Length: 225
Ligand code: SF4
Image (cartoon, rainbow, N blue to C red; front, side, top):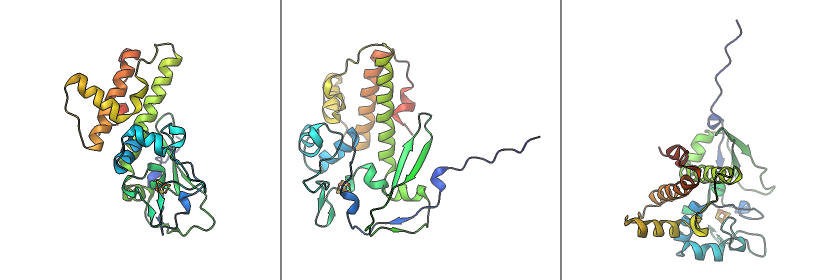
């Protein structure tokens, strides 16, 4: 009889602790990727529509990387730190950790190389789970997983010839997609950002369902709790 393999440890239980001392060095020379949920939050935070935010605050107006200034610094870094802190994107919340999610949904945590002059302090106290909870990262991780899964399924549908995506070009603009959906259905627009994220996911997956014959497990991919 062979030994029973030890149960695989939850990677979020790894010992980890980090205290930010707001030196802001992590806001320079970094590519800050954002998804439609993060764009919608930042647009609301900065008093813009999603379309305005994409045009004004993301690289090439594409809506997926935050703009940097001539010193290669994030445009949201102010004299006293991040000017959009309550709505800062996931990568900013997780730093100095990075998160990789494999095709099977398993998660891997990376330790980023710190800036040589960082004032951040590694304490080793606590766990990754406690750190991400304290950073308010969980809704952002849920959103990221939902959008990544949607893109994967959309690519699979198109590559397999299951059909052309007949979604409007602006379907990834959360505000536009929700407004159009509510106009068409007579539903009341939700104002809570998490409700809006959920509805946006439903709209996106419905678009895919039309091209994939509705074979997907929508609830699972949306990340319902
Ligand atoms: S969004 Fe805020 S925390 Fe993130 S890089 Fe920009 S200034 Fe820094």
